[in-house]
Length: 272
Image 1 (tube, rainbow, N blue to C red):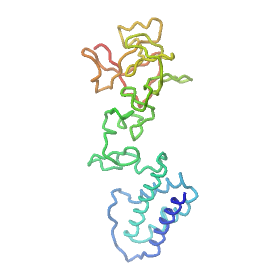
Image 2: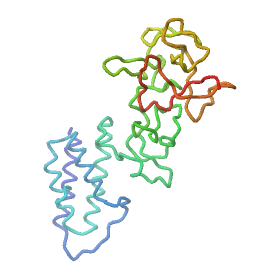
Image 3: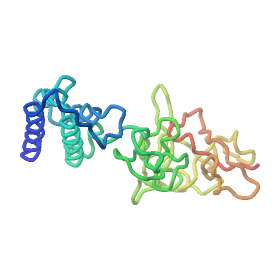
């Protein structure tokens, strides 16, 4: 905490110097601000402080807030504060990597997309996240519905590649309640071979890369009184996993279970 307090004091000192050293005759122009509102980084910095160091928020607002001392002088003085806010936000993000309110970006349009940058895991970087394809080390794709900006959730793992699980497999598993659905989670279980009957609620689940599929999708499926049959999963629009003569159709879980929106890219190989 000593580091946090010391850096916060430094930023406030910058704001104080700006206020004392400014004059209305100065006409310097701030440089290096890519945002239409260069003060946005300070707004985000204040949101971060409110989340991780709320006791310091009132003092920080005196310098970096809407009516703070940072904005009472020249453009050059304001740029000093903007640079200080950016440095402070980076520091807090390093100290609190799990606090999303301290991320350096929140959306792709905050990054230099012309240079291939996207907002990935809270910072602008060149990445495949958001390119419309769920890569092996992604759980979903942020260009698709309800996927987090970093392509790492909200589901726990990738049923196609197993990413997100170490020794366990990533399985589509049912959750009950008034609105039954399916979740992707890491689990150890007795493996049911491909093509055999399966139950969504049993401890035995289909082998990795397969899922218990509604018999309505598989004309050759004989569920034998169970919920469905194990079928190979695939990714819609990129169905390289399917065999010749098969098509990749949207996965339909048995028993009217609902697949979460961030896994809507999941399909199942069925006879074409």
